[in-house]
Length: 132
Image (tube, rainbow, N blue to C red; front, side, top):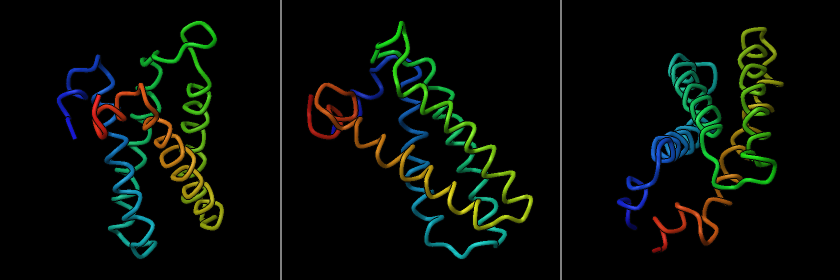
């Protein structure tokens, strides 16, 4: 692993990647922690903030340009931001079943699956983890 390749990348890529890694780790912990506790709520707020940062910062990353400076990943970022708002609203409204569905879906689609694509050859995280 060579994290110097990540630090050398243009802003906001390093901060975006670190926030995504943090959200991936914290999300995994959230999935196994007891739900509804004070710790769950605090960790959830941190996770939502990390995810919002990851989604928002993606609008300033233009490595993949399919429609002008944009790519399908930017649509996922919009969906992520909307889903985060919905997840918080459903939790506050007491609709925990819907909250759980949204949060698990966000973790899987916006972090795990999307994160797997960052490991493809030619991408920064591939170079960091497997050599450039």
